[in-house]
Amino acid sequence: MGVQIAEILPKKPILLKELEGKKIAIDAFNWIYQFLSIIRDRETGEPLKDSKGRITSHLSGLFYRTAKIMEAGVKPVYIIDGPAPAFKYATAERNQIKLEAERRLYLAREKGDKEEIRIAAQLSSRLTGEMIEQSKNLLTYMGIPVFQAPSEAEAQCAFLCKEKLVYSTASQDSDSLLFGSLRLIRNLNITGKRKLPKRNIFIDINPELIELKEVLNHMKLTREQLIIVGILVGTDYNPGIKGIGPKRALELVKTEKTLEKVLGKVEWNIETPAEKIYNFYVNPPVKNFDIRFVEINEDKILKMMVDEHEFSQTRIEKVIKTLKEHQTRQKNLDSWTK
Image 1 (cartoon, rainbow, N blue to C red):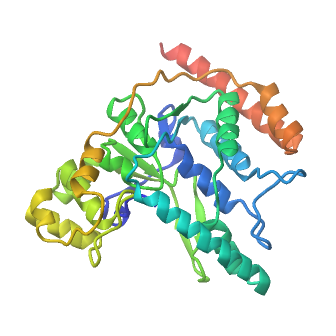
Image 2 (spheres, rainbow, N blue to C red):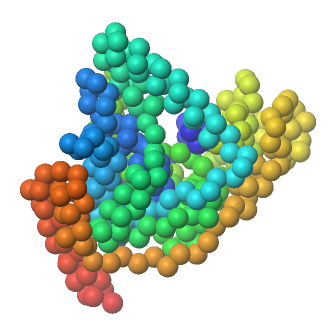
C-alpha cells in the first residue's frame, strides 16, 4: 500500500546509465511482491512453478531484474522488513484484500474471465518465510549485500540514504521520503508500456527520480509537514481521512502548519493516535550496516536455480558470465580511479 501522495510530488525521468556506480537501497518486499503478482500464467493466473509445484516467480524476477541493473552499473543493496510496529494498519487490510482476491480468482476461473483472473491473481499473492529465505540466499550468491531492518525496510533505506551510505532508495511507494530519504527512485528498471486494468489503454513506464529537497521546496513544506500530509491521505499505519485526497491534504497543512492544528480541523476516529504515527515517521528503529559487495558464487547460483528449481542452464550461465565480466570491469575501474 504505502502512502499515496506520488501524484503531487515533483519528479523527473532518469535513465539507468545515470545511476552507474551508485549504491541504491531497495525495499526487497516491495519488489518481491511485484514479481509474485506479475510473473504468472496469463490463462490460469498461476505463478511460475517448478515441476514439484514450488513457486519460483520471485526467484526469476529477482535474478533477472537484479542482473539487469547490475549490468547497467547500479550497486543494489537489498533491505528486508523486520518486525512491523504493532499498530500497522496495512497488515490487516492486506489480509482482507487477499482473502477477497482469492474468492474472485476462484469465480473468475469458473467463468473463464482472463482479465479478471489476471487481476485477482495479482491481488492474491502471498509471500512466505521460505520465499524470503530463498530470496536472501540468491542475492547473497550474487554477491549483493542483504540486510534485515530492525523494523520497516523503507525506514532503513531512508536512513542509509540520509547517512550517504547509498545514493538513493528504490521503491514504488513514497514512504521513504516521509522517513527522510534524500532521494527516491520509482520504476527502477521498469521501462516500456503497462496496460491499465480492464481498459485497452497502455501507458509509458520509465524510471523517475524524486528528490526530497525539491519536494519540500516545491510544496513549501518541512519534512514534518510532509509527514502530516501523508497521514491525512493514508499510510500503512492508518486509513486516510474520508474526503481528503493529496491536494486537499496539502492545502490543509499549508494553512494549519502543525499536527495539533490540523487534527482540530478533521475527525480522527482511528484507534492509533495520529501523534504515534507521526513520531514513528520522525524517529523509526534503524541501524548502521557495513555495506560490502563480494564475488559472485557461480556454483551456488547454478545449484539453486538450475538443479533445484529447473531454470534454463543456458540462460542462467549467460547472465552469470555477463555479471562476472561487469564485475571485472568495475574492479579495474575502481583500481584506476584510486
